[in-house]
Amino acid sequence: MTDRDKLIGERLRKERESLGYKLNEVARKMGFEHHQILGNIESGKRPLKAVELVQLSGLYGRNAAHFLKEDSAVVPRVLWRDAAKTDETVLAERKFIEICEGYTRLLHLTREEPVADAPPCLALPDKRTLIQRGFGYIIGLAEQARKSLALGARPAHSLANVLESNFGVLVLYRDLKNAGSAASLSVGDCRAIVINSTEAPWRRNYDLAHELFHLITWDLFSEDEISTPSKGGKKSLVEQLADAFASALLLPEEEVRSEFRKKVVNRKITYISLVEIAREFKVSTEALLWRLTNLGLLRQKDVEKCLTEGEIRNVDRQARGEDGAWEKPPHLSARYVMLAIKAYFMGKISRARFSEYVDIPFSSVSDFLEMNGYRDDGNYSIALTAHC
Image: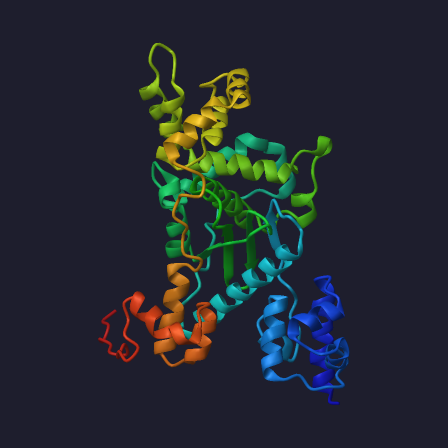
């Protein structure tokens, strides 16, 4: 028994217990004849084999390096939207953190400079003042963000790309299953948002804008302030502010008013016209209806009635197609993949490490590179002298 065996075993035990897994349950999944084999590994009495480490890392949603490193780093704070708080949430969170840590390492390996002011830095008051100013101030903040990001008249069309390309915010789309709909993280050089790829595109857009609010106000609110419901069981005030920000960002007042006026005939606007506007801005019809209500263009009682009756939802489904028929985005962003490819051809990471970074089998590396426009045997070190 060595101190290192004891350290690794202790970390494995803590991981198992944090997920609520029983010793015999994990031992069975590992194919051990008796659960005491795993018990001996966790107590440091039996050395851990490399293949067993890989298997256990997969079961616990960790990178193998997590159990081998000398010191356990502080776990970054992850803010979830509609988190289910299940084992799936824990595993999804760990994978999210792992990708963000990998992104930071790739930035350093490729000597890419992180964007210093990501996400867009806006002049924010202190927390108390922001809350006192209320929803009107948040709507103005959303307009500032739209201009700062140069999102134009249809923000949802370019938000993800602009955040990542111009402001260094890592945007991921992953199958979060029942873990939650979205989450955000800000640690070191990494600002990141993960969205559930199984959601409808318009829901993903809204979640992205919602999480952007949390990144912008990251240092203002605690996790309890964000997650604790307000009186009456409603969302917390911070979550309500984030919703207001998302709505105002994706549905700019001037543009929405203009499109609305075009569709009104004899002071009436049809359901299909409302759905058309929602599709134009890539948001849900319900989000559009509430935005129109807040702008005074529709009466609240009329909106509540049409949503309760449900006919507008039928029109919406017919216009947008069957649920789940939409195309799902790639689970790793183009920028992340590009950094991994660059690090690989610079010789900074091995082929095996590259496959781990981009989450593909080792045998698929050549096909993956070719799919992204690179040859495995290509020479990409040729350079020109820059005059600047």
